[in-house]
Image 1 (cartoon, rainbow, N blue to C red):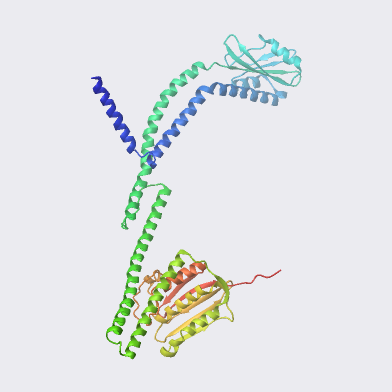
Image 2 (image 1 turned 90 degrees about the horizontal axis):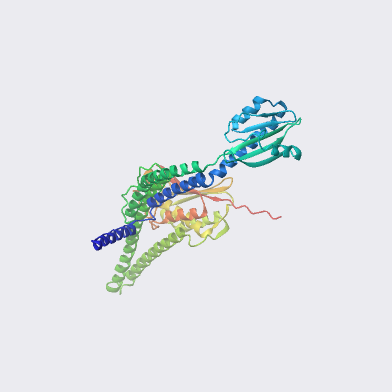
Length: 485
């Protein structure tokens, strides 16, 4: 029998131990629950200390303060003091007050049981104070009739008058005993309520967080159809929900861009590699004895190799810009020279395909920028304008001087960009539905590179479009040389 009871107890202990192992004590719900319970227990401990250990000291302090306040009030009104005023003060503060001079003694009605009348007893205290010549003095004595402590405040007034204020400090043993029993019962009720309310509150607060956590795990596993929604009324949790929704949207975009990047890079690499292989095989198998054909094939291979090199360079540049791996090498330059150099680079288009470049600018445009990077920006935007300009084949570059900045604009005369495409044109490999693109000199990364370079320079940039053409613009700060003192 005893052995069976022992085994049952052992099994219960093991079950409790296993449950404690699975209990997540560091979870938000359990932490909140424990915090609320601990807070309630601390409040109860404080109340217990105050009601038992410190109650007597506080009661004595309270009565002493009453006596001192009454003394100040009497001292303030001493010139117009009368019996009614004395009785009023005594009743208000539950004290006994005695006025004394050489001719008479008046004692207020004794409202506080245990007060002592100095006219009948302990006249020695009164006589000692009168003879001492002091302005005020505190005394303590024991009232043998009630076995309680008496606090006395002696005060010298004008016109040979003396005031003796006294109060009884009642024994609080029985009161403390009653309060202790009552407190034990109250504590039990409070702890039970704390357990229940703490559990309800912690569960209601942790429920939306648990849901958000589970949804976040789904997103981490690649499920971007999750919506972070809660019915919580807590501001911070709702803010967290909004932030997670935003992060999910951005991650989804990044994932799509990643897929597009891999697909487009793969396609862009595959095409020139296929061409290089095909023409190399032609040279080997067919045209090895035809010098003219072999030269033509080799030129095609060189062009495709250049295209590959351009693509790889743009990918490397974009990665470096996004990671900010290479700091800007800012130099003081005249932007007019860069634009002129770029226009000259496209001179072959003017000669062979009748492109017309218009450049409007101030006499000098001095800025402090990374020359190589800003060259890339203007070149890419100019190349983009060449590809999409209208039948008149006009590309315009304007530099306008403002108060603190220079505004640089690159315009084409094409059909414009659709509004739904404007937000995406800066993305890598974004493909619009434009059908009038002429020369494909780029890699699909040009505008993304422009965006990152201008962001690194802290420049304002954007695009304006209409059916009559598109204008890409950006601003650069003027360089002002510091005056030497």
